[in-house]
Image 1: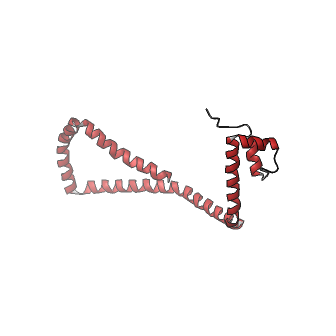
Image 2: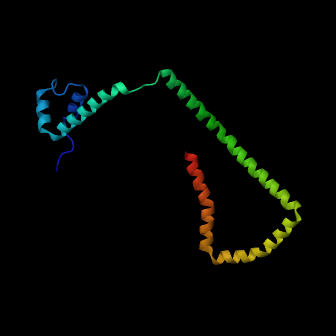
Length: 160
């Protein structure tokens, strides 16, 4: 079985990162890296990464500190406003549900044709209950979909 670690690996990596490899390191470490495949790979890969970072360094554009600070403040304000708005949104949703319920109750109490349709629906209710009892598994599956699907959508949207 091939070894996956070497005890000298951190020393080789440190020497490459500190730009001491291979000229300014202990000769024994150089000899070991020449014989050890792991240390040779570490030296080659770390050297390539270090050279690539040197090549990319001039093209890096760091924004001014004032802009970073300003953007961070704007983000914090936006997040605070969203957090403060959540209870208000919940209260508005509850108020809307109560208003719709009251409107429906007033409509149902004052509209004659709706009351007659409700009575005819009440006559169909025992037949619908018997049908649902015959197909209990299908009824349970439909009820689960009707309740679980909106809950899943709400939880998915809430995480965004």
